[in-house]
Image (cartoon, rainbow, N blue to C red; front, side):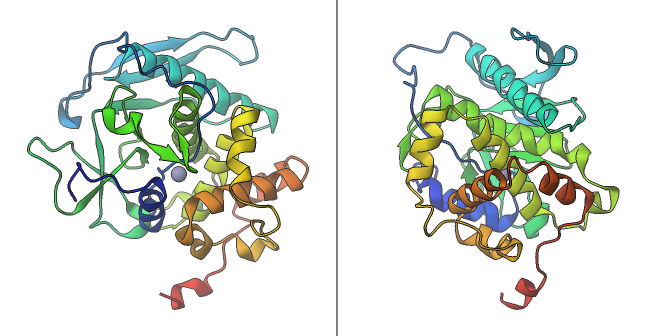
Length: 295
Ligand SMILES: [Zn+2]
């Protein structure tokens, strides 16, 4: 596709979810996206194969985290780095609040653009390197994703004009939205260490579990007003899982945003959802398999 085209967030999200990208994101406006002024930092990232990494230590102003946060970051602006630290804190605080201690090692590569390779199997999605002469025909542009094979979050920089006009849930981009996007991606990366080994087999398809977790972390840690605005787009009377069997790839493929809202409500209705989270990570919850016969 041509990058000058601007498919809707929903379309991109649906595509990514269908392909199993641990990547597409929810979130929504609320605060002003300080786009009027230039980003303070310089810099877009080099293509992946040329990425150079720096160490980034995030502070812990509330003293709520066990130990310092160290990230490896490539590219991005100063604002990107600030958002990355904020998102990292959110993810760690969320998991700590549920008695879970994920691996804290993380790499984030900020890029001018991220393209999803559409040729990959659904649960082995990966990004293409940033093309030097236009987008590859087999790729689709996305906000970001967790690249399982490279153990790296690939994220469009906040300085990108494309992302500055991005909307999700019909709401405009904002600092809070961007942070929530990063929170989603970082939760994909860190939660990987929480799954039981059989679920981490390269052939295991845990897209549903991954997206459930990422949306729950994203929406749970989101600014309350922004979350309310997001949820309001999906009435609780019609957007709620009525049983665990509803938590499946079909629901995810039909609409990642709706799936995210339903996941959050399911988690919240469970009184915090710690028990379900542990079942999910331990492999005691598996999405129904009958869906393979639908396609
Ligand atoms: Zn995701």
